[in-house]
Amino acid sequence: MKRQPIDLSQLNLPVFRSWDQEWFLLTAGDFAAGKYNAMTVGWGGFGIMWKKPMALVVVRPTRHTRGFMDGYPDFTLCGFGSRQREALEYCGSHSGREGDKIAACGLTPVASETVGAPGFEEAELIVECRQMYRQDFDPAFFLGTFIEGNYPNKDYHRMYLGEVLAVSGTARYRGSP
Image 1: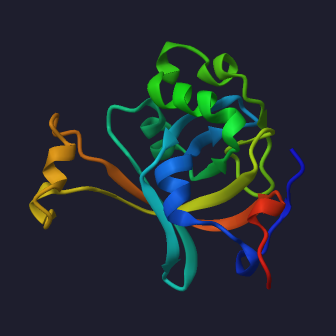
Image 2 (image 1 turned 30 degrees about the horizontal axis):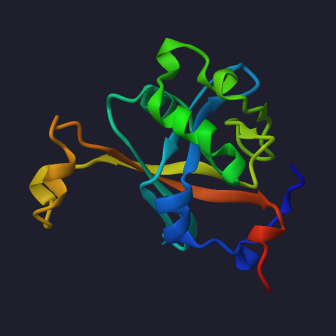
């Protein structure tokens, strides 16, 4: 995939559609050591925190990727075109504990520019992040009555905030300065 670095001031990312309909592939670990795992995510966000650009992702304790998020300092979020929809569905419904799901879905891991976690050759967008904060959700602080319904097994997410260090993408993600 032909990606170019994108300055954050020029990033054109429809965040609600990206998270809700297109999804991202969250990957944590060490590409050089061959120790990493990925999972499809559809809940998260982007914004400014502590005067820094941040990505927010959440991972349940039952997910294999959670150990990689807790054991490594950085992660990537990769956006794909519709041709990789089946690969994202596979990565969201199969565990890396049971085998090499990246190989099984046909994606090609590649070294990132600034972090140890890999991106993917087929990705149209790669967001490279360094973790700055993590916190488990505490149901005592849920204010919306609908929230608890997302946790019938009481497997509350851990939230991760990562500083966005680099972004590369196709022309689709490049806006005007």
